[in-house]
Amino acid sequence: MADTITIIDDRTGKKVTVPITDGVFSSSALRDLDPNLFMYDPAYLSTASCASSITYLDGDAGILRYRGYPIEQLAEKSTFLEVAYLLINGQLPTATELSTWQLNVTHHTMIHENMRKRFVDGFHYDAHPMGMFISAIAALGTFYDDAKDIFEKESFDKQILRLVAKVPTIAAMCYRFSQGLPFVSPNNALSYGENFLNMMFRIGDDYKVDPVLARAMDVLFILHADHEQNCGTTAMRVVSSANSDPYTATAAAAAALYGPLHGGANEAVVRMLTEIGDVSRVPAFIESVKDGHGRLMGFGHRVYKNFDPRATIIKKTAYEVFEVTGMNPLLEVAVALEKAALSDDYFVSRKLYPNVDFYSGLIYQALGFPVDMFTVLFAIPRTVGWLTHMQELLADKEQKISRPRQWYTGVDERAYTPIAKR
Image 1: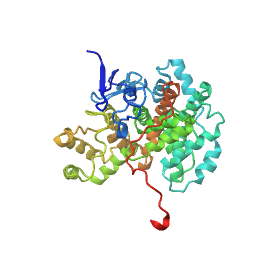
Image 2: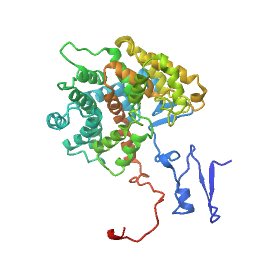
Image 3: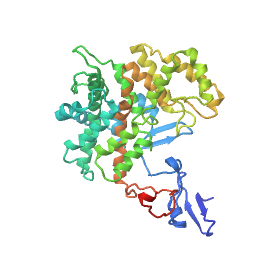
Image 4: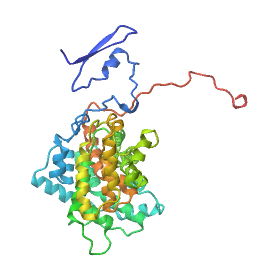
């Protein structure tokens, strides 16, 4: 039997048969039937807006791969910058390529003094770090005359390098400002994760980054580097389709990530666990959720239907971090909540399993990050994924400026009424 689908327009009897490839068929079938016929698909639940070779995700099987490599292997064996190179270039680097890439990133971490002295200092003292981060990323593009030369490979590659190198610096700068602390300059002798933690928390000359915590930061960055066509990545592609510069597009993607239903989910988990407060209150909380009061944050996923492979990795990382930092008091609540939910048919039947956000917030909290920084921490590694998608979109000959259609449900034509007669 051929892998095709036949669609019949019952109004006219016209039919069209098109091939199915990897479970996807072209929407041109609808246009062939009737140019004025559109499919109504709120939130794009059944729409593939692009063809991509970056990330493979099988939600039913709990599989996540970057460029074909299982996320479990990358999280165990790679550094974040190695994974960043893989995503951007399509292949794991050789030792020489990785050394050059690391050197280039390390020597592009500084930001213009005007960004710190004039731009950031203009924010209100209690501005949210993520709001500052989004604004700073957009402003960063104004410092580079070649930012808009997106079809010049050498120039575009330079913008990618600049953004990957500078987002941790900007993130740390936003945090230090929010805490009233002096800015810490990047240290070229440190790794990507070490440098970020040093810029965040250094006070005095005796501060040293624990290698276990630096490695945990790398693992968290790897797990969050890309995740197919999520809300932020879709925003990145839509804005990039207008041929905007990478800084503007990245700021737009970060703005999407800022939403509590997207990047703010791990923040919501910590708030939920704090509200529960004690293991003894877990059963009552479970029952209240089942009765329709509140939500079980950090469980379930739009794509993963059985388990999130990142959640298993991050749970292991959490315990490694707690051996250094001491146990997070909310961990017992989290473990009890996870056990209760996974043994309750109400949640199991709805395929509500822990996702990556359930334990990541506890790790961030143990590392010393305030809740307001959680989404910023998400944006740092995801910048790599966003830029990779922009690069892919610009090279895709089938892509045009994004312009979805709508189903108009408003009133029909009516005559204008003068204000005196309304």
